[in-house]
Image 1 (cartoon, rainbow, N blue to C red):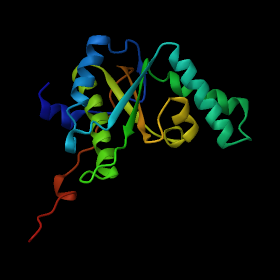
Image 2 (image 1 turned 90 degrees about the vertical axis):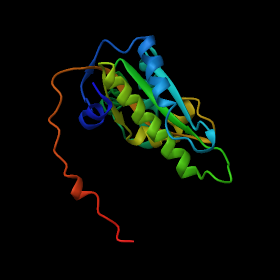
Image 3 (image 1 turned 135 degrees about the horizontal axis):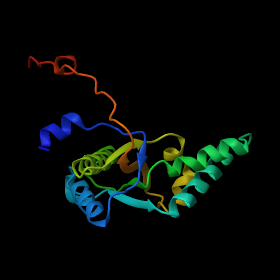
Length: 186
């Protein structure tokens, strides 16, 4: 698939199954991610690969975080939180690592990490896999960030769930570029 087709046809996959990308594919995906725009070569992104039984521990972390956010959460609520970590055979937590820099504001570093996350999804798709980028309460929860070992100068961009598409791709809506772009008259 050529690059333009990939960019125009990538589609989030809410249902994912085995197999996950193998180590060679993961390495290719990470190489693609590290080509994200990166002013001053700060490399403000970090990727935590969560596979196998580590997903069970991530599910426990999600359940503890839910209980801390909502003391009235039921065991059924906690079980639902646990199951989120099992939605794909590979979960990649994408973190942004902020650095003080006179020319690169924090928002630019966050955007760079977001571009790296998108590049990971594009690379996965190009290799025959699929994925979906999710945030939700866990991506903004300080307890989840601590549990993942993030430093005080780091935060989550989101969780990428990656595996093999389970079922058909959802139909993509057509977007007319004229709806999003105008000529600036100067």
